[in-house]
Every structure is written in structure tokens, then in C-alpha cells.
Amino acid sequence: MAAATTRKPTLVQSVIAQLTVEHAKTAVFWYVVYYRALALWRHVRARGISASVSGLYLALVKRVFAVVLLIPSARRKVKAELDTVTLDLETKLAPPHPSLPRALTLPAEGLSSEALSEALTALSAMPNTQWEDGRVSGAVYHGGEEMGKVWTEAMSKFIVSNPLHCDVFPGVRKMDSEVVSMCLSLFNSPLPTSAIDEAGGAGTTTSGGTESILMACKAYRDRARIERGITEPEMIVPLSAHAAFEKASQYFKMKIHFIPVDRETRKVNLKLVKRAINPNTIMLVGSAPNFPDGAIDDIAGLSKLALKYNLALHVDCCLGSFLVPFLEKAGYPSDPFDFRVPGVTSISCDTHKYGFAPKGSSVIMYRSKALRKYQYSVTTTWPGGVYATPSIAGSRPGAVIAGAWASMHKMGVDGYTSSCREIVGAAKQIVLGIRKDFPELKVLGDPLVSVVAFESVDEEVPVYEVGDKMGGLGWHLNALQSPPALHIACTRLTVPVVSDFLRDLRIAVDEVKASTEKGKGSMVMLYGLGSSSAVGPGLVEQLASRYMDVLYA
Ligand SMILES: *Cc1c(COP(=O)(O)O)cnc(C)c1O
Image (cartoon, rainbow, N blue to C red):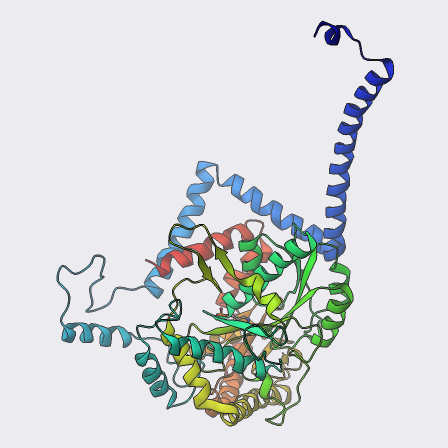
């Protein structure tokens, strides 16, 4: 002991000890600097300088807004403004019912069947936008007169079923797996012959397009972590892609780079996609078609990049679902979009849109079972037992699966082909009509499917104002931002009213032109705020959450 304490370290030893500590400090310092610089470099490289600067500005403005709100007087002022708008929204969206009281507590005694039926009738008759006459863009993807009966029968037969208990409800399990198989073959994936066959595609059903997209992102995140050790995953997404990808990035902590689309074709700019790829990139995204303007991204081009850089490529065919696979059969031009494109690794397809299934039904497909495995969630230590679920939900409505299965069987290849012919035909008539008779407007891109978007090329005709006038004429169009535009997503209900649409659009445009006092349209209130004023972005965020408060008022 004594010998050990008295032995002095040699000069070399103490130098090494000192050097090591100093070196370690320096190394850590430079590692952090290098790491930060690399992240910054990748960020700026992916987005370009001007988008990086404006992104920084936006983040800063939001932060400042949040700080300003800490000042009581500012908070009071903003709150007062928001309260006014919220009350306004509440009277519009959640007015008191003339005869039905607000049910804020359980009835002390259960209602009789008659009373219940009366209440339900009154609720379903609450005045709403008349979607039946085809003037609402998207929203109701109607499968025709008889589909209601098909749903009612299928769903009522499986009303209590739950695929979580597949041994109790074998019929639902069978239909669930067949819905997926039918979609896989529709998107030209080979099917495995059994549960142990590693070849061929695989998928699951989900509650909707959003969940399908979330699941693909989650699967790729987990795969990248396990197979490649990537802990800070990034995805590269067209600016025109569905908001669900940003939701996935929020939920799953994945960095998202938005890539602009070409001004004319509205397809994502492949050069910029390529520039955004770095060693943390795990997935690319393309839409077939996208929601805002209905353009189909260059899936073959994205596929080349995905293969070259060994990335996943998700094709969002939620909206295209049962239209795009039938374009050729219906006699229309198409673009490559499915598993025949070699780099495509997953596809989301909404049975509850143009598949005409009841709401709450979508399918996520992968090129292989090995990919699907990363979507699964398994917990082995839960006191309730080993718990394994393929998607987000635990219990799931078997009735919706039965509804989807029955819709697909009711339609068949012939049914979907003719509905594609009609719906896409209606969209094409609208495109032609606008191009021929509306020099004031310009159709965005070259829509191949059901969505037609148009902007104004005439200063005298602010496009949101046209949207307001169309609203006055009973039409419900979607307002788009960047560029300001309107769109209509054609459904079967639009088919008989195409000429009414073009006639009313003429009236709306002429009225806007003739009016001396031009507003900018009520949509501008929201979108204009977002981009033009410094408090805008923060305020819009708060306004949007007030909107959700109203939904549960
Ligand atoms: C509708 C849609 C989705 C998913 O929407 P859900 O409302 O969650 O079903 C995804 N992508 C596109 C392009 C869509 O139009």
C-alpha cells in the first residue's frame, strides 16, 4: 500500500495522462463542431440556400411569437382576436340544434328504440352541404345507388366482429387478407403462395390513407435503424405530397425535406431530390397522383434514384387507388406507378376513396414480407400476454373490412374500369373546357386522373374570389396555396354535372371581373396571414387548433 502511494508517475506517464485528457476534450469539441457542421451542410444542401433561410426565418418568427405571447398585454390581445374567430366558427360549425338538446351527460335511463330512432333521424337530417347533387369536390366517393345496400348487408353481418380475435372471427380474417391480396395483384405484385413463402409482396389493411402512410414511414425508420444503424433518419418528400408524411415526421421523429415541384409539369423536381440525398436518407416519396393538383410524379425517375442510393421508395396511391390501375383498360394514357417499377418498395391505396369501400378502410403494401415485418409491433412482457398487432389499432372494426371486401367484389374489374372511364372522362372534359373557354384561368400541369386544379392568369380575376362565387352557386371547391389555386376532385357524382360546373364557372369568373370592389376571397384571410405578416405563421397555427377545439365544442 505504502509503496503504491509513494511511487510517483514517470514523466512520460504524466505527460500521457495530461495529453489524453486534453486530447479527449479537444476531440470531443471538434467532434461536436464537425457533427453540427455536417448536419448544417446537409440541411442547406438538401433545401438550397433561400429555402433554408426562409425556413430559419419561419422558425424564428414562430419562436418570437411564442415569446411575445408571454407578455400579458400581447397575450390578451391575441386571445381576444382568436376568441372572436372561434366563436364565429362555433356558430357556423357547431350551432345548437333546434329540437335536440346537447347531450352532455348520459341519459339517466336508456332511450326506447323509438326515441332513439327519432333522434338519429333528426341528426342525419341536420342541414348540410348537399353532396348528393355532385357539387362537392371529393369528400363523398360514391359507389352508385346499390352500394349502400351492399355496405349495409356486409357490415350488419359482421357488426360485432373484430379481427384482433381471428380465431373467433375466421371469416373476417379471410376477408382482411383477401382485400390485401386483391390490391397487391391490382398493383402488379406477385403473391406469395403461403405464409412461409418469402417471395412476393405483402401488406395489411389500415384505418385510412393516413395510417397507411404512417405505417410505411415507421417500417422504414425501424428498418434503417436495425439494418443500417441510422439513428437520425430523413425522408425526402415532394412538396405536393399528402400532409400525412409531415404527420409521420412529427410522430416518429424523422427529419423531412420538402422538394419543390416543377412549375409546369407539377411533378417533383428530380435534380433537387437527388441533391437532398445524404447518408441519413432512408426513403423517397412519389404521389400517383398528388392531392393538390392531381399530377403523377415521375415514379420511374424516383425509382432510379432509389435503386442507385439503396433507398426505400413509397408511392402514395391513396387518391389514385382504384383509378390509376384502370386508366389503360379505360382507354386513357397512364404513367408507370406500381410494383412493375423496380425501385418501388411500398404503395398506399385507399379502398375508401375510389374503391368505394366504407370509410375507415385502406391498404398498405410492401414489395416483400421482410419489409412488412418492420411495420409490426410486438410486446412480449405485457402482463396481459404477448401482444402483437400489425398496425396502429388494437381492436379493429371487422364490419369495415367486410364492407371493403363486399365493395370490391360488387365492383369487379369491369365495374372499376367503367367508373374510371366516367370519372376520368369528367375530369378531362373540365380540363378541355377550361383550356378552351377560360383565357383567364390556367390548368395546373396535365392531369391524368380525377383532380383538376386551376390558377388565375388574369389580375382582374383573383382565384379565391372565384372560389367564393362558386361557393355562392353551391359548389364546394378546395382552395390550394402556393400557387393560389382551386381544385375539384371529380367523383361519380360529378359526372352528370360537368356542364353545370363549366357554366357556373363562367358566371363566377364574369362576376368577379365585373365587380368593381374586388376582395381577395375569404380564403386569403387565412392563407394571406400565413405568408404576409410576421405574426402570421404562429397565428395560423393557433387558429387551426382553435378549429379543432370547435369540433369538440
Ligand atoms: C386522401 C389522401 C390520403 C390519405 O387520406 P386519409 O384521409 O387519411 O384516407 C393520402 N394521400 C393522398 C394523395 C390523398 O388524397
